[in-house]
Length: 387
Image (cartoon, rainbow, N blue to C red):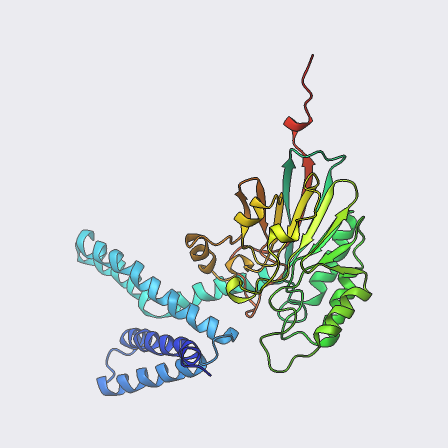
């Protein structure tokens, strides 16, 4: 293990230990104001060590719950400070001031308010993770389309991990009733914690979706289980399972669909976007650019390059829309294509939040979804000049 990796693993434990020390001191001051200082200090240290130990694994749900609790406690304390000052300054009479101050003191210092807020927040997050919704976008183009088309985008199912398998199975039936023209699986359908049996099952389920031009798949950064020393299936077994269920793998490849569409799929960008994959221009060098060009790429990167290459629609996942607030907010602030619709030149970009989350069984940002994209000729392009 590198020093940086060890620091990353230790950071949550250190934060939890420090914050829980002050959180515990606040609680003890309220509930046990007469406790001897030395004994209170020992209890606070013990509490800090326990919380630090519980947060030794950053990727556990337990760590996420504790860090949320401590963060909420800190925010409650910040919010309470100006209210306390206001009560002391503008409270009319000692009796009124005491009543307001005691109410504030109880809710902010007894330690219960952060617990209630955290329970409500993560309770919603757990419920949100267990449901997937239909999200629809409409994309108009000036290119000649003989008809309107319906594309379904499914990404980041991370099958067999933190979401009930029944959620996907129910939605697959719903998706088939959409009668889509094509279905794109934009990566991370499986991951390191997916068993071989679940890997085979999910592609059997997704391969059963009825569509006009079929189901197409691009690899994500987790599908081939690169982040584990003990993979449950080989890359060849993954590819075989995909293909035997009638799903077409696109890895730096493009296919023409019907008279109007061209679908290209890129190899995953991997960490640092330096995977040696073909550029959009290289991938489309022999393509008919008069067709409506759809680029499927697991990670929403290189939007500018796609636009320059003549891509009309870039579809991606990977970000989970941040999954846990406020990660998505920070992603947007730093310029990441995090969730929803974006425009880069003549290229429309759609980033899905994914069918489920990753790592933690909570989602407090956006929702789990599958995406329906309606492709149609723009009204202005359909108008013919009058004589």
